[in-house]
Image (cartoon, rainbow, N blue to C red):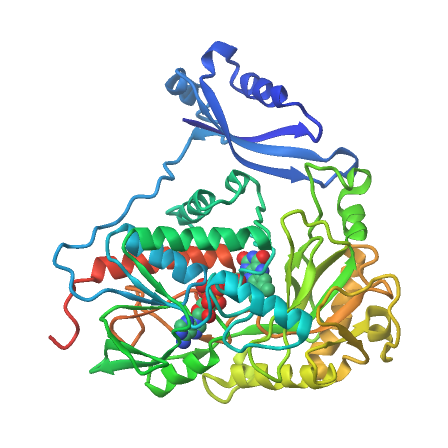
Length: 537
Ligand code: FAD
């Protein structure tokens, strides 16, 4: 197949126009075009008066060889790379112990799926509930302010991103096309096939629930096992080799391979691992607020007259500002037409995040605007970042009135340094509610100063970003893991054989897609090492 890059067409082009453009680019008659598929579709909105759709297409033609020769100097016409996923090995017939995967977020799910596809019959252990039951608890918390610390926006089947926008893009280098494998499996599990070719695909929260159930069914059909409400409370390590995991009820599952895919909120698990001597380092992360604007403001700014066009959908943005104090502030997890959500997992602490439904048709755009911090800001050991998160989340809980309402402030007041009393044109979406006041004391002083400077700088890029009535909701602390459980080139912990730190919690992914990709990599490493001898033998 031939891959054609950079085919640009007007926003309102007909389907026939794409075929015509392919024929024109290759200078071939229709009879020489057997078939084409869209590999990627994005848009070029640099000129708002003339927004273009940009395609990458894969073309089947009997003239492939001749065309490759003819276009050998044209970087926009190449051979389509082979992106098919192939299993690296298969489980042996005499497999004794089954590999254990801790956590059923995207990382654990994809590690489990791959191990199951290779025939290893993995056991997946999840501290939270199945996704349906978990939905009841999570929405219950948002509506009734009753937090279940084991079943919430962070914990339960599907992991942290289940109630999310379901954005599926990542910036990881992916030479082996693992991302394609993740997307393909998601489509098989019920996601729209468009996620395979849209530039910035998203699934939307309700669809994710069904997809997670279908992935589970597939793992089980392949001989895997998924156990809910099974928190791993301890890990048995003998002479530097994993021997088993212990569940909350005292049951021990003997194993030699443990994929640790616990996400960034498994603070108790990190503490346990640290106590057991597993090598952990502190890592940078970011803190800040969610900001909400009218979605129409973002659409107008990005798309001008074309705002609202169905091929464009709701606009997003990505902003970065390097502050005078040396810090960087950036927008994170932007949710067009979405909601700010309560993402706490510990009682008496408050943290926000964002989600959207597939249609992204709510009236507000929200994103986190966060400032980067490093272990120099929390120098007291590998777990000090967790303690900082905890103290900030506790302060936010108190500022919100101690009821899981979030502290909030209008942007105009935040910039002017006065508390807010009334909402204006933007009504915040966070449930169970926003308590207006002063966010000044909710974060360290340098962070507040950085955020103020950045909001004004962002206003130069998106006119209206600093509008008085935009709402800030506090706080964001779980932008990524505050630790890294370092691993070697075999994907195993630096000092614990058989422990495979993976995904976001271990510091090796950020987002659904990259966590899924990491799950695949780690599953391959487990499969390839399965019968390797432990160090002491
Ligand atoms: P997680 O998804 O966090 O999964 C870890 C799992 O391990 C959890 O299910 C947890 O219950 C379980 N667990 C923890 N400890 C134990 C234990 N001791 N025993 C047993 N089980 C345990 N990313 C995007 O790319 N796009 C988005 O649109 C997006 N939106 C988000 C919206 C929200 C509200 C949130 C909270 C996150 C969002 N993210 C989004 C981030 C994304 O969800 C994470 O990056 C991703 O889920 C990380 O995957 P993971 O598998 O590494 O960890």
